[in-house]
Length: 366
Ligand code: C2E
Ligand code: SIN
Ligand code: SIN
Ligand code: SIN
Ligand code: FE
Ligand code: FE
Image 1 (cartoon, rainbow, N blue to C red):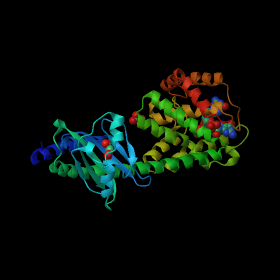
Image 2 (cartoon, helix red, strand yellow):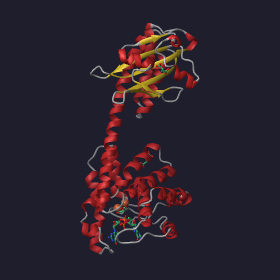
Image 3 (spheres, rainbow, N blue to C red):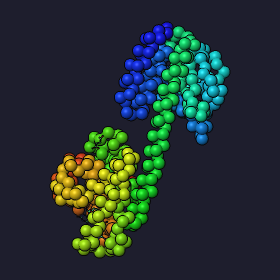
């Protein structure tokens, strides 16, 4: 049941051209797994990643079943990884390496399998591609193995890129946390404040209907909105009383200062952080600072963080003010709807306010 070489090439190019337009790495991997599965007329394809540090294999893509983790040399996949060679097994149930637990848990009967280890440039095994069962229960052949081997080169390349992106992202997040806490300590606000602003922002973004990726980016960067306060003198930042006009002018430079610190970064997260630092004191009616932007000209990240920040500031004690009552806080949001704040966001906030109070209670300062 093999395709002719011409058919195969046509098939691959059709798939690759689709893949080229996919930007999301997870979708790309799914698409590659589909391709591997269909090239050999298999029922399922899993993509396994090896985590050498933890000594495990886990399924990055596991078609038709829950993700699986197992020891790096466990099962048939593990034995292919350990010996670093491909395996065709047409009677899986009789194979001594087979990990029967997997079938027991999924209720699926694995009969036939091809496993192909994937390598990095230094020829280390970084994972494996596994196809399971065939349409019509025809045995897997050497030709299937050859075709799958060819495809696995693409998959390995994509996984390398994907892992690199995840690593960079993790580094960015750590950096942001350190920076957020720097701003925190300077203005004597608690670590809980950072978490609350993150969660309020995430919730508002969700309610507003931003996609999950945009929401989680905002959750990561909103705590950094005041990073520019590291440039404000202690005498002003921690002044017990009200700021005079000149002090307030200086204080307001924190928005531009934060933007200046972050604006040159090409990293996704830091670019988003720059927007938030810059625009979290803009007001919907155009009377905010530093640019006096109006309405939707203010980035959605800025409009959301403005609400999260003020909601939290009002409910908290500051060196210059006491915490407000819940009633007074709600009154302010009703009054400032369409003035300070985006009316659509205020409506969402008011309608779902019990979720915001719950976050405040969960991350309370005591
Ligand atoms: P913050 O204390 O975290 O306040 C963030 C924002 O919450 C404020 O931005 C403001 O929009 C709102 N907010 C906080 N407290 C009150 C309040 O008592 N009444 C009203 N109506 N709104 C409030 P804003 O005004 O741009 O201030 C930015 C930052 O400047 C503040 O962050 C705080 O660090 C500092 N700041 C502002 N006013 C004073 C002050 O009188 N004394 C001192 N020491 N710092 C101040
Ligand atoms: C194994 O490799 O033995 C089990 C893995 C699987 O069936 O998915
Ligand atoms: C998104 O939903 O993808 C983000 C929207 C925005 O950044 O304005
Ligand atoms: C500010 O927005 O300038 C201060 C708000 C905060 O510290 O959360
Ligand atoms: Fe601020
Ligand atoms: Fe803040």
